Image (tube, rainbow, N blue to C red; front, side, top):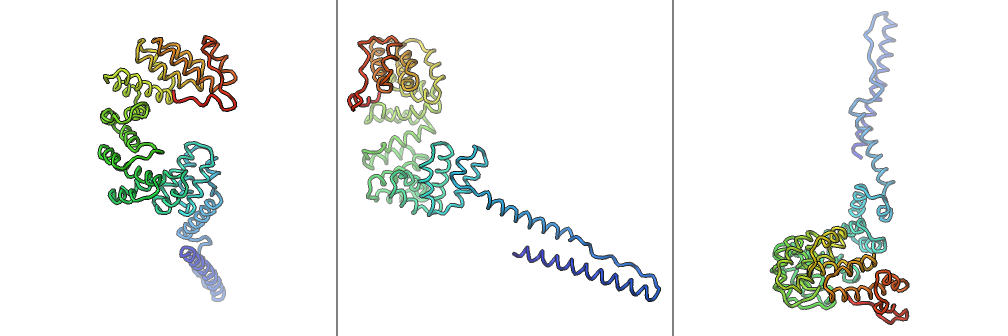
Length: 391
């Protein structure tokens, strides 16, 4: 408003000067005609505003255009997500979230949950949660407690609270009555601690009780630690003998390590002394590696000499391929050199193939040379047979 008022004043001055100049010009001309004397002509004020006024008019016009453009181009969340992937879409998402009232974030998150998966949906979710935690953390906690599909928000809030006051956040988390909400709150506090003191976080996690329906708190810490220093995390995980099998802390570290440096993870586990543990750990690494880069994992296995390591890797790759390429999976299983390990892998893989392909699984197995008496019966369509266990 002050800029517009100033513009009006400038225009009024310009018009007044123009009128005055014309009037003076006529007066001088008239006086000269009456007296017969020559008069110096008076120059009229310019018909166009001075440069300063022109600049103000242009700026005002541009601002008006920008406001009009931003009003007309404002998009809904669904329109933004359906747009082409670009830096512009990210900016549109950021602006959308920035202008979203805290009271509306819960509904927007539910709307996102109903949209197709993808990196853009994940980005939008992350931006909304971060904005909510920054502007109304208590509202975010209340929403998470009432909507278990979004209970991870509790963890994010308490991670933020721990950054301000770790002891206070821990005491508040321990006082929560609902075990699921308490678990998420403790997870957030421990996640904050694990960034700077993973050993301290592990020690604390051991005192907080068990949560049977959730991932062990220690696994979360090992995974986070292994993303920063996998060797140190693996060395500590070896000392933890309470959990064994594929859920063990060592395997948790190795799976995460494999996403960053599979060959480094393999080198570490190959230096361990327990052959049975080596085979199991190699299998875990190859399984994760094959999900990220199937060709690289297969090429590495093909370069190995026959033996325990290759057998374990080939078996793991076979099960990774079982759902997408059963013929190739059977080929890898049949390449296992140890007869007992090969038969066990083929039997388990055959059950997997029959479960996933009840109508043509037998034909797939026959084409791979599996004897008829070794082909499992297809699962019972009425519920018999049950789903296979984890291979």
